[in-house]
Length: 227
Ligand SMILES: [Zn+2]
Image 1 (tube, rainbow, N blue to C red):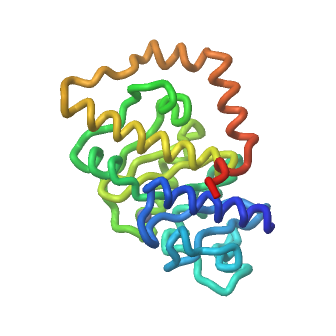
Image 2: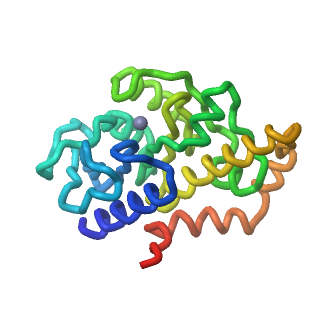
């Protein structure tokens, strides 16, 4: 358990230092058997320590351990774990460039290999739904029912990614924001060139990229911070 919490705290600090969340926005969870550990409500990513993280029954939603309340966006996490038994971690953030670009009506489209390798082709973009509501959680759940969905965009809100580890979910979030950054800047100076379906199919067939996916699944935590 402490290893899981240490990984979550490190991922949370990495998300905050990467500018992918601000203050108490965003949340991270990790599956632990029948439970999930999730960010505590009201803490910034940088302030929450292992003893602050509550655990919740995935089946019932009841708090099992911890003195602090789970994130107010707990339902999104619970519903994803229920429909995707292979998912071990969920990362929800409010990344600036992603929110700006997609809320202006653009859809993210792969312009470089990493984005496609991490997210693949099915990245749903959904209209704004009031935050923390059951309606939002159900809308998210419906998209993640697709087994090839590893990330989605919530217009005017943020992004959600899943993974076999916190590290994998973290890198998927980082790739989304990097794609938004590149696409935004390309739109300022000309007409962006996107990767074609044929190019994406070639990436699917590259052994080295498959290796990288496997590597990310096996590694448990994001790169260590510079101390
Ligand atoms: Zn949110």
